[in-house]
Every structure is written in C-alpha cells, then in structure tokens.
Length: 201
Ligand SMILES: N[C@@H](CCC(=O)N[C@@H](CS)C(=O)NCC(=O)O)C(=O)O
Image (tube, rainbow, N blue to C red; front, top):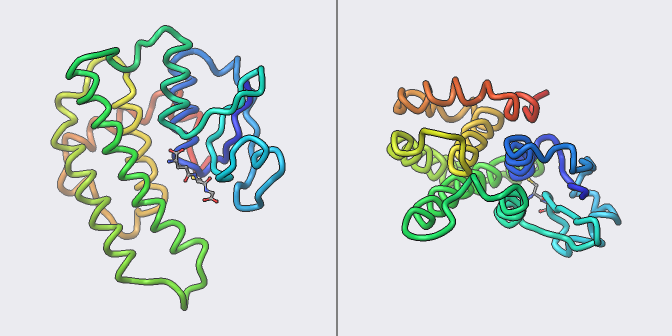
C-alpha cells in the first residue's frame, strides 16, 4: 500500500499514528508530497487532490482520513473502535470532535500560512480559534472516559492537541483550562507513534 502524505498534515499524521499503533507501518510505503502542487500521482487517485490518500496494492484509492483509519483497523482485526452499538457511536462522535478541531485549526493555518497578510481576516481567524478552543474544552470534558487501552478516540484527541500546539501556540493556551487533559497529553505524546510522526521533526 502507498500512503500519500505530508509531514505537517494532521489528517495524515492521524493515519500514520493508527498504522504504527496497529503494527502496519511496514506494509505501507509513505510517499511525501505537497498537495498544493497538484502532483500527478496524487491527482490520479484523489480527485479532490487532498491528503491523506491510501492506494491499495490493487490500485484502489481510499480517502479521507476517517475512512483510511477504519480500513487499517479492519485490516488489523479491529481493536481501535467498538464494532457496534451505542459505544461505537459515542466513539465516532469523539473522533468527529477531534476531526472538527483539526478542520477549524487547519482553516487558521490556511489563512495564516497560505494567504498574503493583507488578505487575512482577523474576524475569521478569531471565529476558528474560538471553535478550536471550545472543541478542546469538550475533549477535556470527555478525556476521563477515554483512557484505557489505546484506541481511535485517543489517537484523534492526541493528534488534535499536537496540531493546536504546532499551529496555534501563539493564540491558544488550551492547557490553562484543561489541567487533566494536559497531563494526559504529556504522557500520550511520548508514545513512539506520536514521536515518530511529529510535524515539527
Ligand atoms: N477531511 C479530510 C481533510 C484532508 C485535508 O484537508 N488535507 C489537506 C492537507 S492537511 C489537503 O490535502 N489540502 C489540499 C487542498 O485542499 O488542496 C481528511 O480527514 O482526510
């Protein structure tokens, strides 16, 4: 399998952490690229030109990151997310919360890193910033129910917090309101899967 990705992409990081935690890293050839260059190999498999995109050995492409994570979990026997029942939907909701934090933080990154300064909107940056802050506070409220053996929810939460630190350290001190979450993240971020996929490495 080939994984089109980029080091700073939090969505791709989530997939790489899932692969590492499931022991699948050796089965995946990581192909780094810049999606904003619209490279031919990515565009041939992903019409939207987004990463991550996983291309199976028979050429079947899979996207986006929640789909790829489900696929890898299934391939490895399904230990990272409950298979059915309300437990599954609570876990999926928590994964969506983490992905929503990533979406809003990613909007800020686009505004700050890909737009000329005179075209940036402080109003929208604040809109997305407050959304990330509220999302992380909710993660803080739910973290107590999300510890235990590593799972998809913890990976989503950990990657979302890592991305907030990476892109928003100067505008969001999420640790101030979330001492227990900060303690959890300090330990979680030491996992080899997280250390091996640091966006700033
Ligand atoms: N919902 C998607 C989001 C993927 C995404 O937005 N990826 C960004 C990089 S982090 C991208 O490829 N952007 C390229 C573009 O928008 O042209 C997922 O979870 O995979």
